[in-house]
Image 1 (cartoon, rainbow, N blue to C red):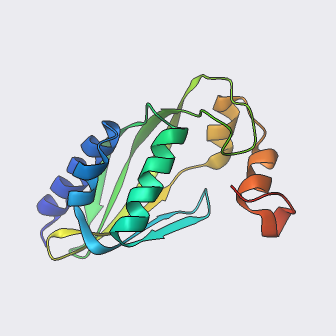
Image 2 (image 1 turned 180 degrees about the horizontal axis):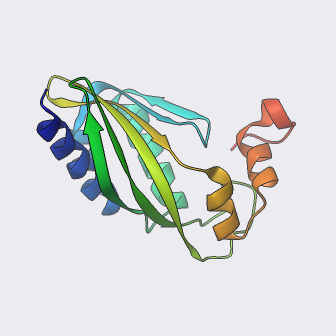
Length: 154
């Protein structure tokens, strides 16, 4: 797949997610898509799990917006970098956020199959998100990674 087409799909996904348009996002995914978010310790496989993961994400960050500033590809993989703006809400992470909108750098790695997105690895710094949201990174990590910290699972 050409780099131009890969970026076209990634940009369409960024637009769909920025509108919290789950059906539009799902149309861009291969049926076997794998979405990984290492900062949250989550992996969603297939369309049904990804739909659930996206809806849960948008419930926690209802004003999510991402802008892609650059990209590079090697024919198999596309990497993009940009900025996400989002407000942490609710108590999914076991903390009470300040309601301020965070602005964080992001790095996203994509793979493709059959002219669709087959994989997305979404990287960002959890501590930066927590600091701008007025919450303890340690408390959020305890909630996200109970086996490592002894906390409750999110």
